[in-house]
Image 1 (tube, helix red, strand yellow):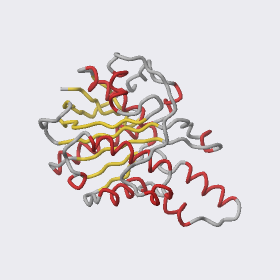
Image 2 (cartoon, rainbow, N blue to C red):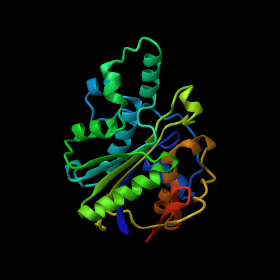
Image 3 (cartoon, rainbow, N blue to C red):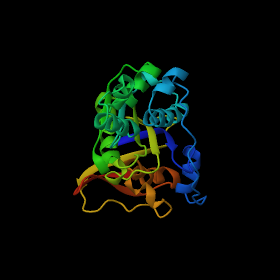
Image 4 (cartoon, helix red, strand yellow):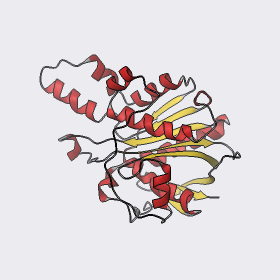
Length: 258
């Protein structure tokens, strides 16, 4: 199946946006890690921003970057939001509450559901089309990309795909060692337009080993499912290449620039 990538948003330590990431992925600039500034999505009013979780703010900030680079209106896109753990700090706070007073804050509970980021986005952007919230463990990026591509082609309409990981505090991070935030957002269209960055050919097939982690990437990101997407984004940055993104231990979606 063939899809068009209309725009990209990126957030990670050392990557403030797609331009920063593109220079590293293309080999023009060495990677230099730097603390990621607190995410302040402009689409959320101040009160909602305060009530939202760090994961919500991370996902929306990445999505806003992708929206700034496309002429497609948010109301015209379906959504696929993907994360192995979409609450992070809120999950930790709920566990503390249940282990102690057992009094759960309504705001905490509201933010604890996996589709909270897509819900905040839908309300903020007045996006009324379908929204999918997806989790596939370490294979979340590949599964999310495949879901977004299939939806774009079946509906013949653009899809916003956002994949994100936010740090988990101890002791949860011992099970899921996400220690740094990373997020990738893409606007995917069923066919190229004048603004298309590139097209990808996707094919699902058997695969024993996923593509290796890029040499520049900090090992701390290897626990982040969204960080798998940087290998795919490299095909947009340097003009070509083939990447296998896992879907199961023995199945992958192959991404090839065309």
